[in-house]
Length: 319
Image (cartoon, rainbow, N blue to C red; front, side):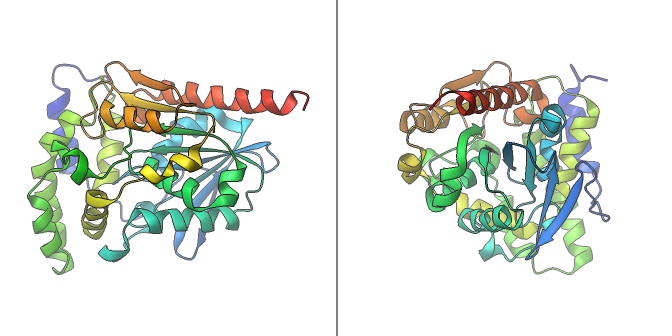
């Protein structure tokens, strides 16, 4: 069923009533591994010419990319990571939840998974900033990267761009205090948080009519996110910028995608990325919000299709 006139109310209901996934199981991908506490997933043929590295957004998980992995299938190898503080990787101390550490984790997993050939890196939201950090700081990964797709992300700190309204919540200070509570108190507090942030979140991250199942899937990932993660990454996003990634991007082929109605990482941020990365076109998607990877997945699928064709075409051309 698709949501129309009542979709905001149903989104609020989904987030408020999502229960924590105590099993914490990811059944979307063929292979599940763990290295130094970081959980990651592999799919597609081991001998594929190209590997796609997927970096998910804030309060999400690797499984948020399952529609893209299903679409590409055996045309590539797929590497997906649950960032620290997210998904099955689970809780980290507040001070360890930041973009630099997340990029370090991905670099370790990249090596542990044995990725050596041509790579496409795709990052959504927080994952876009992690992707920029990765390309800027890890030369070997940058050398292997043949294409990069940045979806609904930013390059400046939230403090410098004006904190997005959807995240400008006084409740964050209360979350900071709540992390010391007993488990039962934390769960009760989590439910209070859901009730407070749901109306804003529901009205902003999805703007396109979206199936109930997708809304519930998104709500579940948010509700599985530890409180430490919320505080740590929000603190880091206040001051972290990736404007220095300009040199690393250079003439790398790629694409910058933003939803026309994205209130979290608006068009102005996508334009700044495109200015520092002129070889990457900017694609503004009508009637799309911040969760474009779930509400209009075909847009992201087409971008990956194009990147694969581009790389294979370049590899087959005489040199």
